[in-house]
Length: 293
Image (spheres, rainbow, N blue to C red):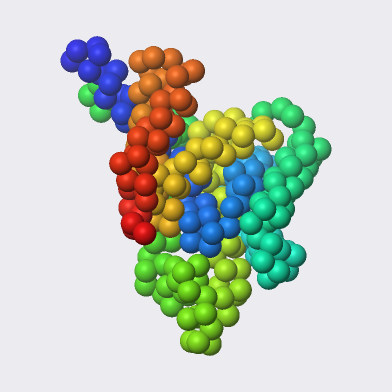
């Protein structure tokens, strides 16, 4: 096979696997930002915090990091309920959710980052399961399990969320709450309760993403800064509340970023990837799967 073609194919495959990590990171934001219209700028740092606790528990008990991420997801669900309760009490119910609410999540972000530094120090942490050192070779294409298995877990969790949103009453209420909360009240459904559940789910998804993250790369308390722009860009590109759009946008973002890094250098990768975002929005302002106003 031609070396350039082999490099291109490997770049596409690696980009798709990287997109799986981005999808895991952005899916929770698609719920909080896309469906609830809550600009949770702290979502990436919650993912990193989940990664640190995955390393802590996984190292102490000798468990697979992805298993730990799934097991601790209910705890992060409860944390999400607590965060939304505070946000609703102090800001949303008074109509101050725009600027003041954004400042609230900025504060949460900095508190968590400083807390991680105090608890774990500024050093990088990682946890390597056995499969992290295994690479499948399919002809000229290398498929590292370090990236494949977290991507599969991400797709499974997003698929479960999609089924929940499409097939259950609570899921349908989550999809409707940002559009018409008064209609939910007429059906004897408390919109605040629905938002509380949805925000808890979004933070639980951050736990899954954190487990995927520590398998793919080492983390430190400032790692979330790398993901803030990316997860919001993916969410917007996909169409805000669309989970299929989130997945497609994450794959596109990962492939464009990885191919740019492969052929032109890593310093160009973010600029080209965000340029791709602007191009998509210029053609479809509502995003890939969004609905035109």
